[in-house]
Length: 283
Ligand code: A2P
Image 1 (cartoon, rainbow, N blue to C red):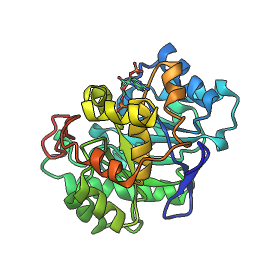
Image 2: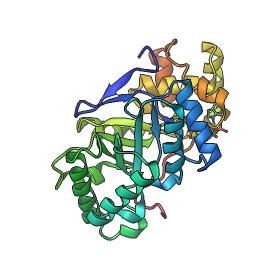
Image 3: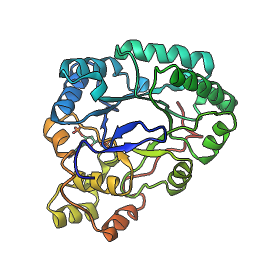
Image 4: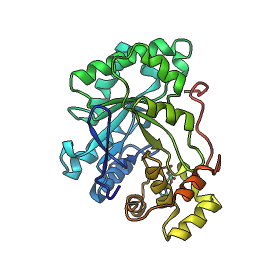
């Protein structure tokens, strides 16, 4: 990992930039257009949005305004929870593409495995959704397809009817929240792990050990956490609306954490909270 243009290679050969710009809680309109445009100007080539974030329109607009060619930016979006099932998924995908105003998507994810609306039939709903994902993928409308917030039992259920194995699982991964079981199982199926909330949605900044490590390496806490994420083999998706931080969060390719510090950060159990249980979420 030497530079911001480094990539991971997905199981289908598609290359994905090793850091993405997260847009959860970035408000549609001026804020999102400006943050995403700034990110692209500063070197990000991977933007992570979702129907559920409500800012797909602004992401599309920012990419166009940036002047960078569409094929040079990797764009991810996610299917929202109310739209599981074959037909709803196809319609929701069209809606996402209209909002982005793009011809194709680089990666489409099922946002949550077990939304409240499908709690009694999530396996069947996901099977229908995945069939739609596979068709859209084969038709060339999406370059890669994957999951988010899926645990082992959700993946196993999906694989019963899948003909294409998901290429990505995007989950919450940050100092002290390493979801080892999900990571190990997803990797055993050939998936890349994307790390959402790599800064614990801001909670890592209050962890004394993170402060000490930042001082030790002469870096910021955010940089130590993002570097840690890369050294764990995750694909971090840091979010910020401040240009200086957006820039800072990319400056992580010119230092290295020792193996023992990588372990120390993993072992800060719960210091930045834990991920929600996808089987009991209320959305
Ligand atoms: P802001 O958007 O105001 O910059 P995560 O990526 O884990 O979701 O964390 C995002 C949170 O961390 C946001 O509150 C964001 O605030 C803050 N943040 C992002 N980058 C930095 C940074 N380099 N230094 C301090 N805070 C940051």
